Length: 378
Image (cartoon, rainbow, N blue to C red; front, side, top):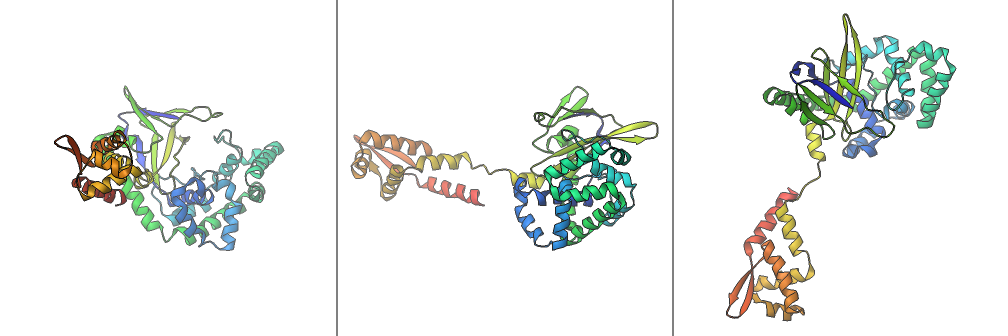
């Protein structure tokens, strides 16, 4: 996927977060925790809070939550600040098609893309109903009953879904939300400062490692990793009147989601692209540690039984190559090769005494080694 926007269109970029969407992303992580290793401990704690009824509802709605996060973009807009109670009311009172038709579109998606679908079309077309049911059955058979209820009584399905989310929120999210929200808002504030001080490019470049950001004349392009086989590439060109919505999440890593849609407005349509990315703090936590080159050099030089024997002997006093060879039981050329590696790493230092070359232990290197280990283990 590739998104282009004018380099001068900083006003088209907005940040947002939504408690309801964060809850749905957490449900996705809960159902596919193997893909989210940073959240294993969170998932174990959360599962302990679930009663039997809530576990059953999570299983029933798993088709729409487990394989990718549900969004309901016509009901919840992360760029509009709302509280959880307000978003729950919005779900219960939104036009019914904003709920039912989006869930139906999820069952009829092609290559991950949702096409508009009308509830009336599904009622009138048995082929569509069969196709939707087969898709759900293949992925999660327990969700077939929810799909049938969605088609036969969408209002009842909507209220059931709202009750399910409300129960999940109270059990698993309400106590954590103030702290989660604080981190989300801090991430938004930090990235907004970067955009203000260093420009749009700098702010976009740090969003996620999956994104490639480049300036091409007056345009800035944001490119997601190449599409998988079977997925046609998608390109969206935004103007200053369109919106690029950036949404941080505790429950995104290691994935990044990006989606676009058209919004109907009087006089013109407006395009909107939403990128949901992992919090910067979580991305840093997920980076594998990189031992210092100095520590690696010292470890490589010492990590050999013979060289460790040499270091232990040198710890007592300086010794000649011939003495070390006799004590260890190797030839002088073989000992010389080991001593050369130790000297290059800084463990030992040669000294000439008449016709003999002695080696002494460099005590300062031991201090460098322990300091490097201290830095490694914190």
